[in-house]
Amino acid sequence: MSRSSDVTIFGATGFTGQRVAAEALRSLPPELRITIAGRSSSKLQALAQQLGAADRLQVLGGVDVTKPESLQAMAQATRLLLCCVGPFRLYGEPVLAAAAAARTDYLDICGEPEFIERMELRYSAAAAASGALMASAAGFDSVPADMGCLFAQRAFAPPAVPSSVEAVISLSAPKGTSIHYATWWVHCRVSLGDPGYLFTSVMLVQCAATLLQERQALLDSVGARGGVFTVGTLFRGSSLLQRLDEHGVKFSVVGSS
Image: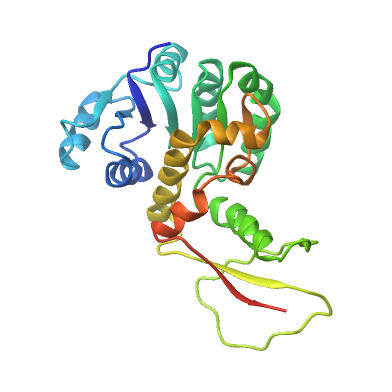
């Protein structure tokens, strides 16, 4: 099937979608064809002008979650769909379903566990059958935790492996004491700037770049033709950690015993 776009950002005129579009223009290779999609063509065209990318961005208006045919047309026209339309429990399922049916790879910024688990249950078989690679929460809600867990796992010298991982989020923390546990441990840190929408955009776009450029390696890593995965499962054997580090999401070992 011929695809007219490499990456389509659905919901591009929304609060997060605008930032994802700007980050995609900044970070993705210039030869990639980027489409911004949504309901209003005029708003999409205004966004393209605002971003100074009217010549580079393709605009796809008239796409509405209540119009399945518009979602199908969007999904069939692109290699990778980035969904920024929420709340996902209300609007997300038709978009993911259209991508799974069209063999279109899919990432979103969902932070709703019930939706994520329900989509994996309902659509993993369909995605595997069509050959689509799909993952939710490819932003702040999962990338630091999932990829930080993989980073911590790799910090142990073989053959040692972690028996458990604890994740803590802190925006600011007072100084205090630490307790030495009677076992081996590695303390890792994931550092980034704005923990919300700005770095969610960075993380989503770097997940997109990784999927586009390393798709076959991801398929080999998960051992399947396709499916609905978590971020950590889908990107565990990829260069995503390095890409995130290069774009301001820093993973480091703080200490060990």
